[in-house]
Image 1 (tube, one colour):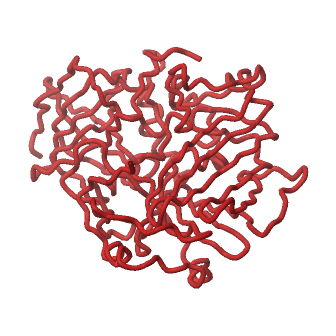
Image 2: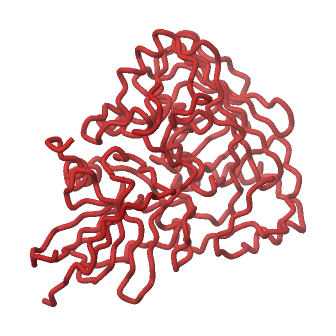
Image 3: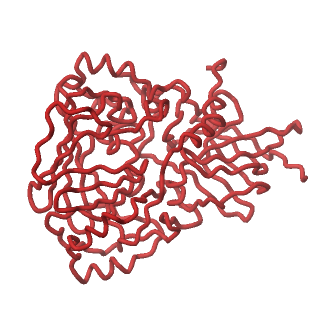
Length: 139
Length: 310
């Protein structure tokens, strides 16, 4: 199996003006001021509710394979923006940009996926619902 | 000014035809519609840069949209039937009721009574300013698998909604959860001291040719009003005002009245606009099954949070 390298594991300090709010989860879990860019191999594509998930193996700079999982929206939403049940399959080599979780675990929220043929799948970003709970005054 | 969709999509021939003729009075087809599949589904469209492929409906057919220069025909009288889409994910309401999102802004603070504030503090939503980690929420929908009930069905994940009419009732078929509600329009009164139900008891009355006003009570206290954990008591009364602007647009306004929890009524959804879809539009199924939710939580619910690091 071809060695997949994580070409970049970029944690940028740039601020995301548009941050997706997750239908269920944990917005509280994600570090919305950072993003990671991963190159790796899809091991599983879960097309189901409440959110679709992609599992992928990424080899870090030390040669260790890290098992990542990243979520997007539900199938109903994704079919409206060009995704399908067949968008990904095990073995696909993709570049995934995601918001990482604060805990440091290999878990993220999909911002964008670049497919092997160069096509892009974009995660939903909805400025209208942006809010940063930590910044907002408490009731 | 009503927003026009920007999505790359076809203009459905039905819209073109409809622009040259009046929308057919649907009374004839209502009986047939009643027995049509209750399948629904989904909606939305990107606010972010478009993906490289166009969206599809539940049947895999390309989404259609109104042409930019489209002029809708007048609203038919006493008729809100049709397949109504909530464009642009505008009905998601992930921060709570759209007109009062839990975003921390002073203008969105609700007029809680002392009891309302005390009850609010016991709810632990996983979104909004009071959000907790997914594993810590006591949201009855996510934690217990309860129906989200009413009025939350209007105030969270309000998506494509099919409306059917009979001489005695208006039936709403919600995409999210594949839920249906019956609004009685036969003149009956709301029941006195009824057994609570997840979706309560609803009666409707035509205010004028294009406005149906619906009153609902008898809802189950275990439900939350919205995704942000806003509470309600058994005394909750909800008014829905369906106003058909023209053939292709329907407005919904939802007002919450619960004197035990709030010092005054408040508008939770303010003139929310739906767009009529072609009658061939297939609503995608959208159900969160317990097994799928369990798998999601297994992969995401705990791994996304590391309590030792919080």
